[in-house]
Length: 167
Image (cartoon, rainbow, N blue to C red):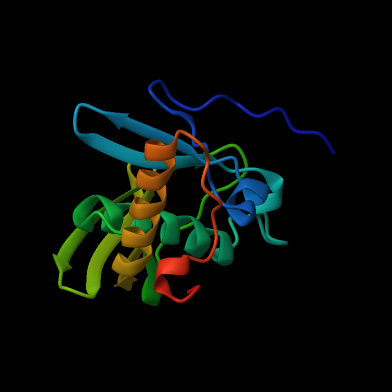
């Protein structure tokens, strides 16, 4: 069965550079204008369970990305999800536009805390809160790698950092 995808609302563009899991399950769109950022997706048949409603696992996967974006914006560091608590409040169906927004509530030296919500036409569908482990060492290694690359004007190999014992 083919399904024509309705375009996202004005201001949204397809998010690039997503990991393979999200790319496979998307498309995911981003809105980032005038200090406001949101993420969204158009519900497709592949996002739904056997009842024709968005599968809870897709809500959780999508909102995990929203939360991670909030943490990155609040801390400047990449992160990994430690714990996520979620509440399923309502559902969406094929063709609906689902929008996610998030915010960081606290950042410590090693952890960040964030909340997010998903809405559809102003109706609250899903809320989540999460704790993330900040990957500051990873960010520092990547910064060094990019600095070496810029200095040599030659792409440095990505992967294990020899300055950190290959970790």
